[in-house]
Amino acid sequence: MAFNQIQFQHGMSITEFLGCFGTEAQCAEAVKQARWPDGFRCPSCGVADHYVVGHGARKLFQCNGCRHQTSLTAGSLMEHTKLPLTTWFLAGYLISQAKTGLSALALKRQLGVSYPTSWLLHQKINRAMARQESTHRLSGLVQIDDAYLGGERTGGKPGRGSENKVPFVAAVSINGKGHPMHLKLNLVSGFTAQAIKEWARDNLAPGSVVTSDGLSCFGAVTEAGCIHMPVVVGDLKPRDLPQFKWVNTVLGNLKTTLAGAFHSLKYSKYAGYYMAGFAYRFNRRFDLHTLVARLIVDVARCGPIPKRVLRAQAEACF
Ligand SMILES: [Zn+2]
Image (cartoon, rainbow, N blue to C red; front, side, top):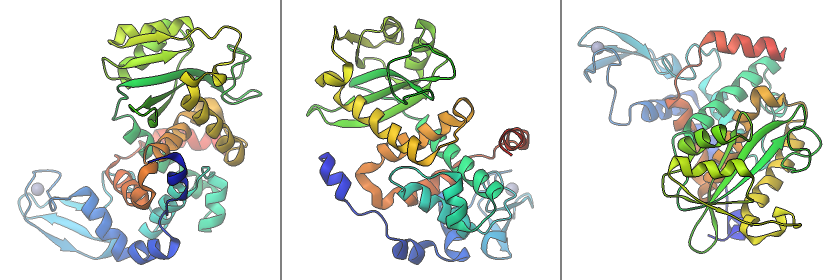
């Protein structure tokens, strides 16, 4: 699908969303389907035979084998939540449909919840996206570039290595027609051979053919079984070269998103999650209509975040 067709495709309207996920019972059923697509299985002993106590989000499933009781949200990202599932689902809808990202503050206004609540929802949903993004690697032809968050220009080249900037790698896989397929945005400890080797092992399939502007550390992708094709940039800027068209387009969009939605982003702490959220939406742009349903599945299947992690984040934020 060409880019212009992607931009004009229909997402899910709010009316349609509310028709599918407007009540607690609908949301509870969706969580159940996401967590146990082949029917309930006791998380303790694996037995399917069970009975149900209560209703809606507070429904309890009791195993007939070992008597273990579990709730719809136990062991998931939504564990111990006091919010209605409809609020979680609406947050997922708003985050998934916002073309240029959505801040925790915008989420607070739209949901009518307190800022700490919207902040936690925002964090958790972005973490679910990041977790899902970490499960795939790019393959085939891949354009990569080094970039920084913070400082004067997100995605800008000048000032490599300057203070208060968070280094990250942007990588886009390209199909045989030269169209962008999938995106990876990952924080790295720096632009060193060791950091790039580790990044490539986690994010590129062996045999990928990697084009870069020749920054010396990128040669380390060969240590992860990839083929490196450095392009001599000379006096030109990489954004002027066709070899870097898509990675530069993406970096430009990312810059707009972060500038518009995340004015006070504490880059070093949270940037990885927000960039993963951006990549999550980009990688599912071919089908905006099912994006929200898939996000709900990913949120329902994401494990809980330990309380100590959340507490540390809350202290840093409020
Ligand atoms: Zn059991």
